[in-house]
Length: 216
Ligand SMILES: Nc1ncnc2c1ncn2[C@@H]1O[C@H](COP(=O)(O)OP(=O)(O)OP(=O)(O)O)[C@@H](O)[C@H]1O
Ligand SMILES: [Mg+2]
Image (cartoon, rainbow, N blue to C red; front, side, top):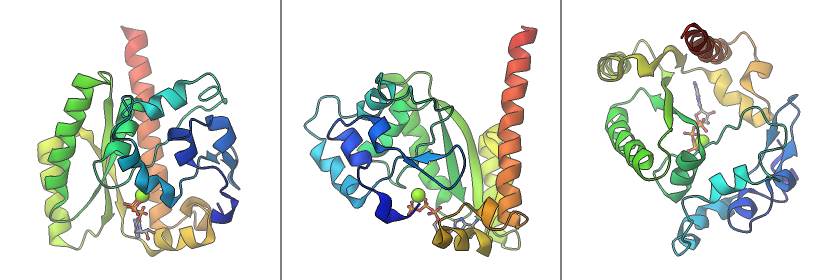
């Protein structure tokens, strides 16, 4: 979306208590709406320190009667790359977490810290938080380090790692400047095909789960 179309943002949702319905903005993509963020949100971390429900603000906002009931099937919460109060709010509110992992040297190190945090959040606030999966991304298969990161990730995390890998692909990096998703910008690009394969993989997992529940 065009950043100029932001009036209210997730800052107003979390800090000012404005309902989600007021914040959502339609996009060019059918059936996708966005609750935009602005740089205001970067100060939220400090402003929230004294708030007793500081870890539950997003959960409260999404489960409020005027919040989640907006006919939304899925809510994707895009997190900052660091572990802070905003990330904690997301993990407390979420059913599951999808972890993008860049195929670089320090990637796995950051991941073990994240796994510890997920365990703590489960104990303290959200026992049913699942890990949806770990997605290897920005992957260059000619690079031996990237191959090593993939092997390590699959060895240590097993089935948590999605089979689908998103390759480094210039079309993915071009798409945002046109404010459209890469799968509309260049549907047959390697990046688009990877994201579609990821969607199929996730849908297939749910179909298996449903089947298993029915059989049981
Ligand atoms: N598979 C890819 N191939 C090439 N470029 C990519 C790919 N994925 C993302 N990029 C580019 O890398 C940059 C960072 O991507 P993105 O914004 O998705 O990462 P992020 O971790 O969410 O960053 P931020 O911390 O800013 O939110 C962007 O310029 C994006 O276009
Ligand atoms: Mg991001």
